[in-house]
Picture 1 (cartoon, helix red, strand yellow):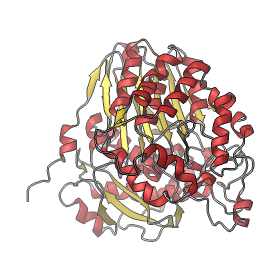
Picture 2 (cartoon, one colour):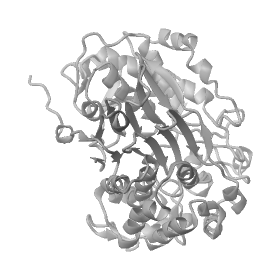
Picture 3 (spheres, one colour):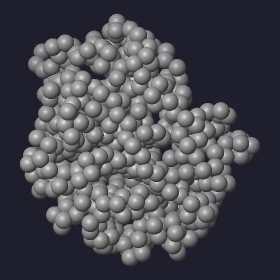
Picture 4 (tube, rainbow, N blue to C red):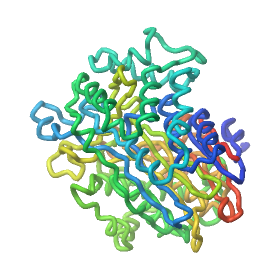
Length: 556
């Protein structure tokens, strides 16, 4: 039987190569905006904000002004990497006890109760103050143009709107979203121009008055009124008291490569834990890696079984570290990693792992590297396709639903409480080769609960498979996830053909393998490689946007 051929998307994926800057994002208009900012002399942070702002206009089901963000920034001049937590906190007037008293068993996925204070725009302010070179007008100009003059409706956006509207269209808090995103009470036609004048005016206010105006100015007052009118418990004080948090990235070694990510309440530690467990088994012996993925069913099996264990650890400890310690050293310790590895049966899948909660997913990842070698790995989200479904028509801001990840179970590490940040699926990443000062690869993905697996598979493909960046990104993914909102993680999906015999071997090991579409169902991974140290060392850049997305990689 002939070997299955690559899908058209993988066959067409190519690395973009340049020497003076690179941007990757899940929509081509966002990439274009970021690259234009780099060409104007902007810092990688300027380019990241520009791309992020455009995504909030043209890809609102993935991110926007009303969402959260996590950053990793490589500062070339300082020779250091910095983490910036731009996730928001629960309003002061909400708690698990109050929702339980109201008869709820969980935080609703949609509606005003799922909205925590949006943290993304405050993080833009903090990052721009520290590193920005261009004016806010220059950085936000592309997003203002797309929102005001309009952009063409595209199939991914149309599908997201039409998939959500039947679920929420009869809710009183959804009227704003209907007015803005279904103004004619019908689906958009592909290519039809969408104009968002209220959002354009909000972006113009941020350009004129500063990013902090989202919280501190008249705009903040209007946003607070919009949340209150939708039935939210939010107050102006909740907005004005919100602050980002600077931190130190967390790291773990994988066969001589240092993998960094964002500390909790990000899920970054679980990507590191997954890799640490895999490292205990040694590299896959003689297994080739190509666009169909690993030819070793045994290695894929180890990845899936390690992920099941990481899920359980995540549910047991992940929450807001300001409220309850997340034991990072213990999680990544040799003793704990060995204990987890010893629980994996290389001959049989665990058919009954403990049930775990499904955290809210739905994300946009982007990365930028500038001519000086500064690098940004940024993940920003509204969650679950338009987040809460609440949109303030006065400001054009629609709000995320990350609060739906909170638990209402007393004593849970991710318990909903006033001022607390929820556990997040979001995890930005960078890779550093052993002994090298600068990043080797800047990468991350959307994909909800499976983000740690997507990232670990990229790392394994690069390090164990020795493959190029494009092949590592576009190759068939195989992931395991909960079989329901609170269920055992036993649902195994592959999003394209695997090498001959691998699917049969995985089933023989006990995995319930099914096929997912090659369209982002198993995430979008985008990446930039700093070849030979990148621009600061006289090297170059290679970039790839996942063909599962509407994205683009662009370089200078």
